[in-house]
Length: 432
Ligand code: 4AD
Ligand code: MG
Image 1: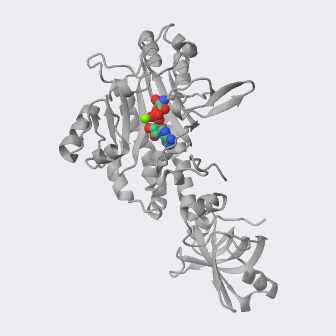
Image 2 (image 1 turned 90 degrees about the vertical axis):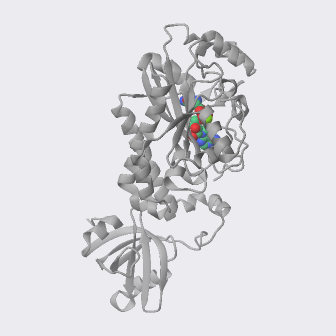
Image 3 (image 1 turned 180 degrees about the vertical axis):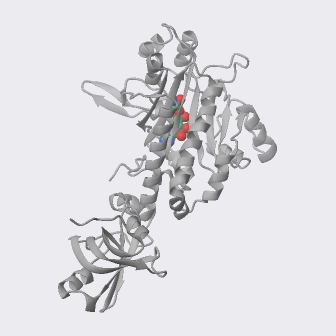
């Protein structure tokens, strides 16, 4: 039986006979010599076929090979400094597995064209690198929460209530009724902490975002956690620890991929080694006023342009706490010392990547919760099950949600969040 090596394994072998399989990434040749570069999930390698040295039918097959045809190759590998990855396979046996004709993606195509052909563009070296990093990131996060003694808790995706504002809900016809796609697992996680105390999840999350920005998706993967007995400081510090753990796993395994994506891996290592500051919203608006000449009066949310201006003064992610209570989601409690401030936080990434985490302590005061719900035009009776949680042995608890694609966009230095997920959904795109 043939022992197939991945291209990277073949390269690691350096010399001798190898059997590899993959897809044609580049091809060129003359009437005596054909160069094909094969790719698989691990790497690429140049293969050379000489007309004089192979049977005629094999030469004809090789001559017909086009971009993205799939092949099995047996041959001898050796170092060749001129080849793209420093090695070359001299082909002895070639088997075409799947032909390919006129692969639609050539050089210099527009981002929209690539998005229309996303099912094919996934094979690009760029998307392959991003998807590998995403896979490592998600696995590291899983490890992190297990090590920290958390239970994985799966929330419902069809939910009767909003938690993050009615304007971004996706309504779903539900038999004779209606329901909504999850905007967050939070309200259910708050039920779960009374059983499991420390829970986390990783789940598809939906927001009907009309804002067409490089930071918003309509479907994204939120990575959330909730813990009984924890306060604002506990969770905001824990969020830094979580991201540092995952970033360090990515750096350990994907330095080459990061460099390929145009990221400066050395810079990320420095970010990892630094302390990430925590400031209050009031200090943030002071920085904006004094250093950026921007007037944000207390009570206004930080918009993208203000977040970006603030981050001109930091080269690591930062945590901003105590946003104005007035403009925060109903479950974020007022700070007893400063009732106009909420016990909440956002984490902002440097270099214009914006808010990557949002979280808070949770209000345990049932009357305050009802009042906040009414203020935003919600009927407290629709939240009865949630308010029940405050009636039977309620305890302080806190949690946050991290936008996986936002963090990956930052780590991978992407221009647009759409490249941080395989098949992006936005207000304008739900295909392929
Ligand atoms: O700040 P958000 O809205 O917080 C919540 O939903 C809380 N219930 C989470 C919690 O406390 N358990 O969303 C959390 C994070 C944001 O910081 C952002 O990173 C990401 O989710 N996010 C989005 N990412 C991509 N596209 C969108 N439309 C996003 N909306 C939020
Ligand atoms: Mg937020």
